[in-house]
Image (cartoon, rainbow over all chains, first blue to last red; front, side):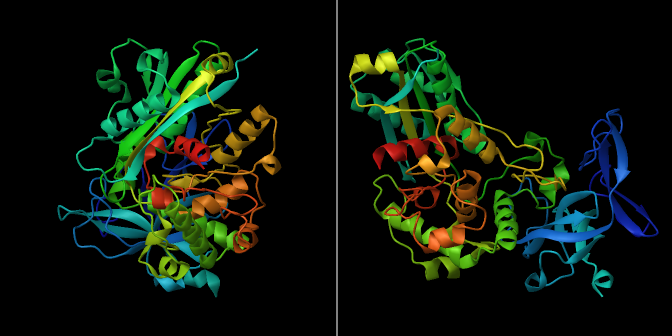
Amino acid sequence: MPDTLPVPIADDLVCSDSGGIALLASRERATGRICFPARPESDARYDRVVLPRTGRLWSWTVQRFRPKSPPYAGPDAFEPYAVGYVELDGALIVEGRLVDAAFDDLEIGMAMRIVPLPFLLADGSLRTSFGFAPDRGADI
Amino acid sequence: MSEDVFIVGAGIHPFGRTPGLSGLQQGVFAVRQALERAGLEWRDVQFAFGGSDAAGNADTMVSELGLTGIPFINVANGCATGGSAMFGAYSTIKSGEFDLGLAVGFDKHPRGSFSPLPADWGLPAWYGETGLMLTTQFFAMKIQRYMSLHGITPHTLGAVAEKAFANGVLADHAWRREAVDIDTVLQSQMVSDPLTKFMFCSPGEGAVALLLASGRKARELGLPAVRLRAAAVRTRPTGSFEVFSPALDLDRGGSPTGLASQAAYEMAGVGPEDIDIAQLQDTEVGAEIMHMAENGFCADGEQTAWIAEGRTRIDGTLPVNTDGGCLPAASRSGLRGFARSMRIMSS
C-alpha cells in the first residue's frame, strides 16, 4: 500500500497502484466462477484475480442504527451509513459501504467506482477498508 | 413403501416476553400441552428432534419430561431450526423407524438485532467489523432490488404489515395484538431503507411442539390428525441472494425457497394452484412478498395487484400468514417454520 493509506483492515482484501485500490478475488480453475473474498493463495483450485474498479449500483440500503459490538468494531459515536451491492463490470456483485453520496441520491443502476475507505476502529487505530463512490465521470 | 405421516398433537407457549421462564421451560410447556391435548404421556414418545437458536439444548428437557432414554436429537439451524426439527421427525416416521415422535422449537432472544460472529459463518472478521454483517441490511437490499425490478412500491410493503397486525389481533398466541394502520407503518422509524420499524418482526420468545405419528399409529390412537404430505428443506443454490453474502454471482439464479417448495409440491403431488392457505417466512414484509412468488403462487410483480385486491387477507382467495406471521407474533428463530404448521392447525 502507498504510504498515504493506513494499513489494510485485512490481508488479501485490497491491492493498490497508481490508479487507486482494487479488490482481490479468486477464480475457480475448474468452473471459472469468481468468488470474493479471495481464497487463500495456497489453495491450488483457485487463481488470484483483481476485480474491476468500476460498475453499477445493484441494490442499497441505509444502516440507521449502530450495529452491535461484536462484531462491529467502529467507534461508539454513530452516524448512519449507506451500504450497497455494486455489479463490478463483467465480474461479480460485491457488497460494501457507499460513500460520497447523499442517501436521497442513491439509485439502482448509477455508475460507481471503488475507493479506499479509512476505517476508525474503536481502539482509535485507523485501517484501510473499501467502499464505493459515485463514478461521476462515467455518467457524463 | 414409505409411511404416511400425521400430526396428532400440537402445543404452543404464547409469543412475546415471559420474564421468569427460560426458553427451555417454554419448550417444556409446549410439549406438555401437546401431550395433554393428544391424551398421550411422555413415555409414549419414541424419539424427538428439537432446538433453539439462543436458548439452550433441547435434549435437556428430558430432565423435566422424564428420563425415558429416547433418542433426542438437538437441531441448530438458525432461523430454520424449528422447520428442520420437523423435517427430522417427519423423515424418521416416514422411514418406518419409529411410530410416534416429537418436534419442538423454542427461543428466548435478547432485544435488538442479532449479533452474529463472522467466523461462525465462514466469513472474515472485517465483514463484521466494518458494519456489513446485519440481517436487517440483507432483508432491505433484497426487497430494494426486487421492488426496482418488479415495480413494487412502499405502499405495498405497508399493506402487508397492516394485514399482519390485523391478523395478529385474532391470534391468542401473538405478542402484539393491536391493529396498526398503513400510515403508521409507513411513517414509523426507518430501520434499513425501504423497511420501517413496523415492517420488521421483533426478536422475542415462545415455543411450539408437534407430535408426529405414522398412519398406523394415528389410526390406533384414533386422534384427529392432520396429514403432513411433504416437508422439504433446501440450502442456497448458485446465483441466489441470501443473508451474509459479501458477493453475489453475476448470473442470477433460483432460491432455496424455490427449490424447497418445488420439492414439496412434487412429494405431495400438488401444485401452487391447489393451495388454499399459506404460512410464509416473513421476518419482514419484503420476505412475505418475495416468497409469494418463490413458492409459485404468483409471478414476480403480481404481488402489487394481489395485495391491493386483498387476495392474501384472511378472507381472500389465498390467505397468507393467518395469525399475522412473525410481525405480531415475534421472531423466534428456533421455532420459525413449524410455528407455521401449528398456525395452520389452529386457524
